[in-house]
Image (tube, rainbow, N blue to C red):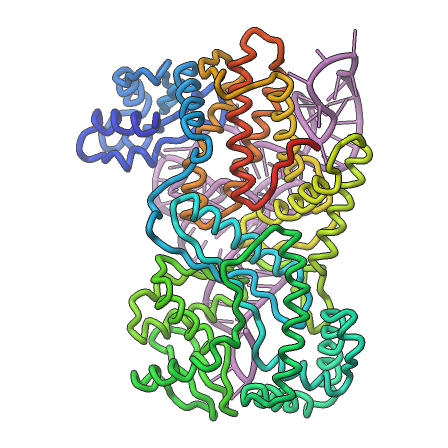
Length: 560
RNA sequence: GUCCCAGUAGCUCAGCAGGAUAGAGCAACAGCCUUCUAAGCUGUGGGUCGGGAGUUCGAAUCUCUCCUGGGACACCA
């Protein structure tokens, strides 16, 4: 708001050569409070006006006037604006109070659909820390999109097909034990899968055996199908436990195998467009023009491959949803694959190919290396979550043993800590797995945020605050930083959504909450002279904090 | 070998459509609970922003180059 006003006035003063957008993008927020609330650097104007920046700044400053501006100063080549705190505070609080549930929302997405491909664990493999990233990032992006008005479709595209299952079936023939699988499915299946890989180092015929089993599966061989279905069912049950803990639901859970009988049509289309070529016995689409290696469509033994499935799935999804965007929340290591899929779709003349977006993220590493199921080096998410919950529980025992609902709150805090630990980092960075970091509940963590929320709620409870008595006319210098952060929420949502970056929300919440904690420490809220007005601000703060946490998929307990 | 990503405080990371003295958290040290939940607050120390060159009034941010780490590079997904 104030930024737009500043931009408008400045562009007016500067003349046509300097658009409002140009000025708007130059306006910054000073790092230090004594430099004001908004700033505009005049250095780049110096060569145009052939005058020094200082003079330009002071001349422009003298013409900036508005009810929102308390004072306009200059310093060096900068114009610094101090806002009218009382006025802006009242306006901000009122804005939240008008409709607390929609503060920060936007409506530009209304009527449009965003499809998210996320989580996608592989059956017969443990739900690892790596899958956590796709799951929680996807969930947060979906929440952000909905906050901007979009309809979202969260798809859990289960990895239930491919040569790896041929290998698993072969492994089961050699080392499988029905009883063990019943008792502890993922562990046992992973064990024989790892065993298969070790054995195949010495005996390469095993690899061929695996391919043959996959071929049997693709040809609907009865035994292969039966085992495959069994593995799938037990795996899905295990995954559901994790989703339950995370509090994440999908709109659609669908395996890759769903597309088995639809891929022929895709291959036909490619043939009709004369895009297919034979190469070393396999069918490929050449992408030389695009500077990419060829995209493999059909293996030399005639079986399918993931590119074909992803192409088929993309076409199917566009026909079903006519999505504005299809987000693939998948690790960075698959960048080339998605580039290829997009190029093939473009070659098929689908003009919506550019609406597919690979939301790539860094890997979860152990010892600086990629985790690998094959080498048996994976860390189970369920174990980590349970450990975090337990740690939260012991904190409660230590700090607040009389708390009601201990179990539920320990779950909210523990799970919240794990989710936040993941989302606070830029998603593109690799993350070195550290249980210790995840079990830290101080500083830049979810429990820090939740704790502030609890403190706020506690004040409202003790002060017997009711919305009817809300008072937006707070006059308080120490509240100003908090008010400014509350004011920033809508544009943070906007930016996080357009950049597909949940970490912006995480960082915002930390800044917001730091401002609250400082205010809380230096200002007595209850029994003071402005109790009602102060409580109103606290109320507004809790609204924004809880809403932001919910965007990240983290709960805000009332007590802890 | 080719392409992509990263290198900022002891550790984990912000900042990167160029802007004022490079910021947090953890760890270390020193304070703050007879008053609103100390999972908190305040303060101190800690940096040749991987090296070098360039563009600019101004570079952690843009360009080039080199070094280091990671990833991808057709019958896994």
